[in-house]
Amino acid sequence: MKIATWNINGINSRLDHVVKWSLAVRPDVLCLQETKCVDAKFPVQKLRVAGFEYIEHFGEKAYNGVAILSKTPLDDVERNFPEASADAPRRLIAATAGGVRVVNVYVPHGTKLGSEKFAFKLDWIKRLRTYFDENFTTRDAVVLCGDLNIAPHETDVWNPRLWNGKIHFTKIERDALFELKKWGFVDCLRQMTDEAGEFTWWDNFRESSFAKNRGLRIDHIWASPSLAENCTDCWVDREPRGWQDPSDHAPVIADFII
Image (tube, rainbow, N blue to C red; front, side, top):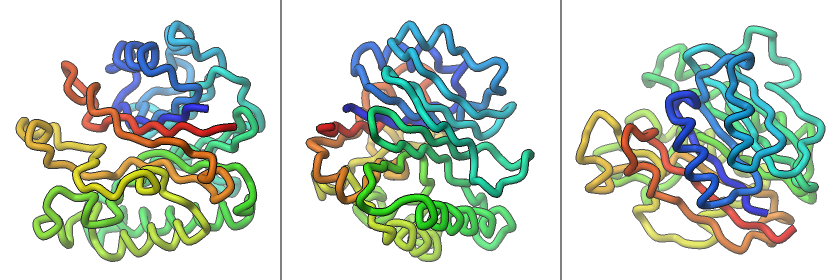
């Protein structure tokens, strides 16, 4: 089973990118973040051209939004944390595909260190850890994927000294992410390689950032130990980031023997 994650930064703005890439790479499950689209206008029929017969989405206008596209049935679909209010930001969707529980998240950005939005980000990550504690064991076949908006290690940042103390790479954010990871997750990409420079995000406002590979690895696929044992590969596909009017993120893909 090939599972992919991609912050598409607007599904309707980059629908052609999603279709083109999906037809070429052929993921069985594609998790999207930052779809920026209300559910009533989600382009379900156009995405079926790419082979996704089963599509679940959870979006809002202009902000946030997550979706799972699949070639196999999606069962037990869950939208947001169980205790979330009806007007809570739409940042989590989960479903079971081929016996694997796929949890797709768009972790809050945080905006500025010390701000209310930064506190919300840290609290959201704590809630995500609680969600896994209460719903899963490490023996389950479960994958957490999405835009986690944090680069865990120095090798995940193009210039650690420059980024030290900045949003996405503060110690408090990284500590929060490590607490989440202590649930038992295995970072699928780092299971395959420890090389630096495997980034998933490059600043769209600085044209040279992608060409010079000045990026961050903030998009991740993490698996439970039992599932990680069956992961045969994990990689970042940089190609779509070089297309015209791209998302500022690149897809991450993992292959599992199921």
